[in-house]
Image (tube, rainbow, N blue to C red; front, side, top):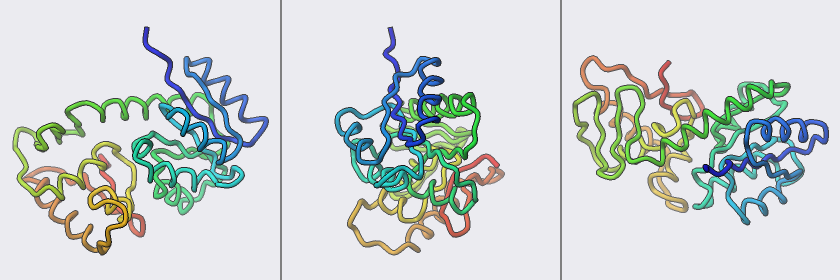
Length: 229
């Protein structure tokens, strides 16, 4: 029998927290609760959950800061994270996604929508652990470090491969230049932001073979994503 997926819910609203927990448990998830950022980080240190739901405005550290901390740690760098908040402006949404969140839901929300988002994100996370990652007609062989567009092999350097991997693993998620620098060159290594732009141009040129759609999107003042729209 498959074990239940563990979901960490970090929310300080005493009315909303039990409602979220009830709906997740009703859908077969094992739920851990935390009411502030400090307790959330302690719970993750004890056991990494399958997914985390972070309210933006929890007591210090905030959900935004907790997200950044989790992304910096090797054991939680790929943890699926949903940001849950009353902040609904586009600028706030971009900030949440740039902090490392995979998805963003504004209050008020439907419990059914939250469950659907969780299941979709878990499916996406599970597929990223396989040997092959696919998006539309782009296929990445993780073991052999090869990428194909349709039946055609793409020829490029290791930097372009490393840039594509986080984008194709999380379609729709916007990655800032800083995040992409960390993915490719690692933390603490000084590389100018325009270096990312240069390699993205090379990535586009290589992968957008004749007649192929350009899926790599530039998000002004935010970064890059891979998107079907």
